[in-house]
Every structure is written in C-alpha cells, then in structure tokens.
Length: 450
Image 1 (tube, one colour):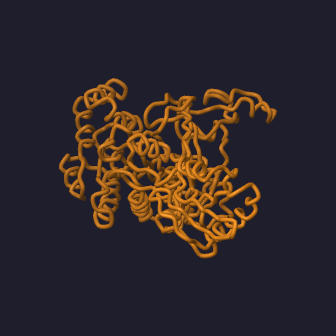
Image 2 (cartoon, rainbow, N blue to C red):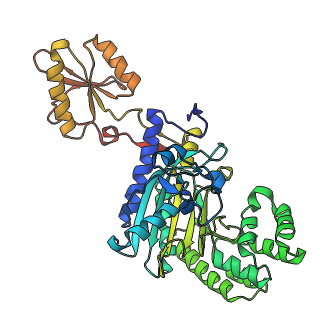
Image 3 (tube, one colour):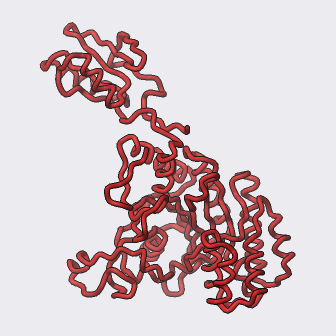
C-alpha cells in the first residue's frame, strides 16, 4: 500500500499508513517504559566534528550552510573535510546521545536508561529499506566509569520483547562480540583489526572471495590469515556451542577469551528467555569504529534482503569528559524501514483509516449545537467523534462516514430521541449519549497482523 514518495528518500504516509506507524511507535514506547527507560530528545543539529569523531562517514552527512551563515560562522558545513565547527543534521542518535550524557552528567542518575525516538538524516542513495529522512527508536544504558556486562544481556532481551510485540514477521537477533573478533585477528597476526572488521562487514554484500581479496590487497593478509578470518566469520549457532568451534580453530589470545565469555553469557541468557530469537553469528562486525564489545544486527526472517532492522552494541569510549568515562550499550530500531516493509508487503493493517468511531449526523442546520452536545458526551468517555459538516440527506451523510472509514453514525430526531447505526451491518438501535459505547474492538483503531 505504501506509495512512492514525490521526493525520493523522504517518505510520507497516508492517514491509514500513519496509523500503522503510530502503532509501532506506541508499542515501542510502552515496552521501553515497562523496562524503566526514560524518554529524551536531542537537537537535530550537531557540529561536523562531533558527528564524525568516531568514524569517517562524511558522505552521509547533510550540512546546513544557511544555518551556519545565520550563526555568523564561516566554513563549509557540508563535509567532514570542511570546518569541524560547521553544522550538520545528525545521521544517528548514538553520537548525539553521547554528547548529551557528557553535557548533562551532573543531572543524570547512573546507570542512565534512556529511549529516544526521532528523525535522522543520511545522504545516501534511496532504495528499498533506505531513506534519506527516517525515524529511529533507540534504547541505551550508560554508566559512569563502568557499566556491568549484564546490561548487554538486558538490552538484547528488551529489544526481543519489543520486536515480538510488533505486527512483523519472525525476526532474528544476530549477535557477535568485537573483542572476540579483534582478539582472534591479533592472534593470527592481523594487527589492523578495525580494517579487518570493515572488510568482514562487507561479507554479505560482496561474498567471501572478494572479502579475502580485500584482506590481502588492502591489509596485507596472507592467504592463510584471510581464510582463518573467514572461518571465524562462518561460525553461526543457536546456542553456546560456538565457543568450542572457535577454540577448535587453534588461536590463543586473552582478548579473544574475554569476548568469548561475554558472548556466551548473552547467548545463554537469550536461549533461556527469548528462545528462537537470537543466534551467535560471528560474521557480524558493525562498521562503526566506536563499538568495543557486543554487536548486534537484526533481520526479518524471509525478508533478509531488507537489511538490518535493528542494530547496535557496546561502546566504552564514545562518551568521555577528561578522565571520566561513560561506557554504554544500546540498540537502534529502524522504524521507517520496518513500517515501509509492513505496508508494502501488507503484513498488517489498521482496522479503519481514521481514529473517528462515530459521526453525529445533522437533522437540519439548526441541529448543529445539539449535535456538538452529543459529541461532547461521547468524547468525554473516550469515544472519538466527529460532527457532520452540513445537514445533507441522511444517505449522503452515511456515505461520507463510509468513505472516511467511520463505523457508526449517530442520529437525533426533533423530539430528542437518539439512535446509532452500524453502517457495516446496517443495524440501528436506540442509544443514550451518556451511556452508549462501541465494542472494545471498535472503540479505537487497532493494527492487526495479516
């Protein structure tokens, strides 16, 4: 049902599509708040230097040269190669959140649990699952000085619960650990671990042969080292058996053992509390440099070509103030990507196209005031109600309600007698505006999984 936007990369929804998006957002808020996460919002604009301090991704940044001029500052706001004090729209919520934590540390109680639902902007080629303006929903826990590893486990479980509550197909959280990967690469003699991770992160896009070529040509890996890195990336288990598979590769390294232990804890807890929703997948790398431990990517089963719908991980050094560190762990759900797939595949739909449950019909033009009184009584009890615009024939008013997707029409005759008609079934009954209510199914718009 989703339409092609008139301006590529900037999606807009019809009213019934927006109801689906709101259902997704409301569900995520409800689950996040049930787990004690507080809502925040950060500004949409950051300095280029702030946005790019943990990774060179200047092609994704939208600069704001006009705003920069208004601020009375010179420089090119459009690229990372310009003035680091130039202004740009944020491309994710994690980096702005790290700044927020540093600037407000004196007002926050740690560990700080936050969720954030906002628009972000990325200058990339629009295609299915990728937009230039889109909504993300993030949860993070940030500590002061240290953050117990148990939060890595909790974050994964909260996200599994949130996604499970949405009208989407089955999903799979694919989890790895950067310490495990980096320790392994060091153990086989590949010291540019960030470069190896960036190459492995391309595995699904370009395949094992081309990744091996990248490792050899760009990072100087031998054939044996490249094949060892690919063997590690090929390990995928639904339980903790990956530990023995990694050790069978014969690489010894202290950081590797630390990462193995951490990933084992996450998978062991997930097997118990979210069975079938999580796998250990040692091909997951996450290209951004600020991840330091657990890393996660999530796919819809049967819709893998859409890409990751939820990703993130542990970052120990993204937020700091002098010697004070604020380690964190978090995951981000691509709401727009999810909603686009729900709509295009008709995976779910709203039970009606508008919030309105009742249209109060007009008997004549003089009845508008009385109709507003009826509407006020219904609204006071939480029943979404409209009043007809003009006193046309009842048949036309009913047709208007039908076009709008309103299920009930309310009639009041000149003697003050009230009746309500279910225009789907044709049933019409006497009703009292002080006590009548639609069924629970009709009271509010519901979004149902197909």
